[in-house]
Image 1 (cartoon, one colour):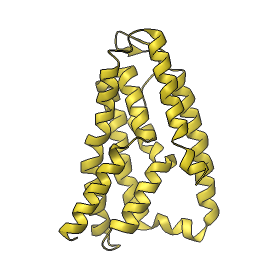
Image 2 (cartoon, rainbow, N blue to C red):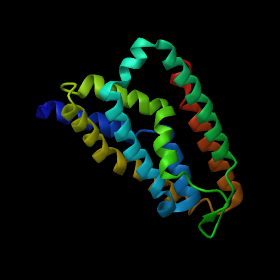
Image 3 (cartoon, helix red, strand yellow):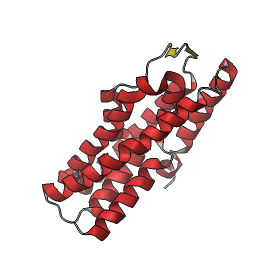
Image 4 (cartoon, rainbow, N blue to C red):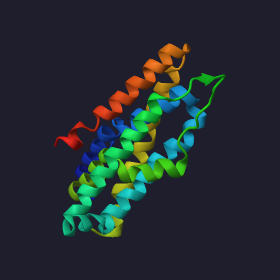
Length: 197
């Protein structure tokens, strides 16, 4: 991989990882509701789950979509339905009491599995593999996945920190409820490019 291609990949990884999307909005909500420490498994699930996704997409999963276009539609419907469910969970999250919410933050495995129904993650993975992978060898795909892993985890973690800092303002139940409903609405709004391409 040339230095120019590596720089372009790093820039794409940073911009696509730091901008709002389902993962970042859920991490911000989790940081506000459960704090940074309790959200670590969620952050690791996002970062490592996405690296695994890039590896599998690069190793040939993209060919399934080409061979069976209906599979793409099925994935899109499942993604939208699951994101609507998550938006409802965020909107109705219980208030935090002494750092311990009545709900539970997303686990590592849940966050890793979520990458497979996250439309933004699919867009990022497909773009990374088709545009920035110099060749389709396991080494080339691995480099792309590692670059994303090194950049994605710190980027998404910043959203958890933002949510945790916002928790200082969200000390009253009415403000926390308003925040959670706003995050849920933004999560639903992030579906617009998927539903209306």
